[in-house]
Length: 125
Image (cartoon, rainbow, N blue to C red; front, side, top):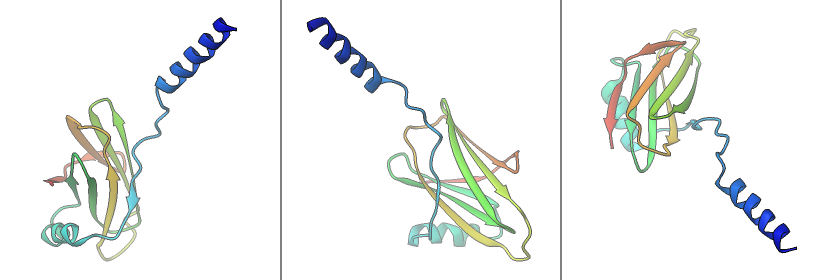
């Protein structure tokens, strides 16, 4: 009985310490708050993508786009990769804001538009 309890306890401990199956960082489309709107106003029509980076709070991805947007992010060791898909089927530029929480500090951040790496502005909070 004692060996059985030790085995069950050990198995439960290993399961609790196991590597979680992470599907990536969740990005949610949001309405900009006052601080984010200030950055949008400063970067309007100049930059396709801007990132407001926060190590402790919510970070924001700002996109000035000519179409429907979808954005996802994933961590690859110490590299944060942000993927943007843009249909570019509209005549006017729209501002899209995505919020996400970071689980660690990243040495590099890479942003991809329709599979091609692009440059972006970074604002630190």
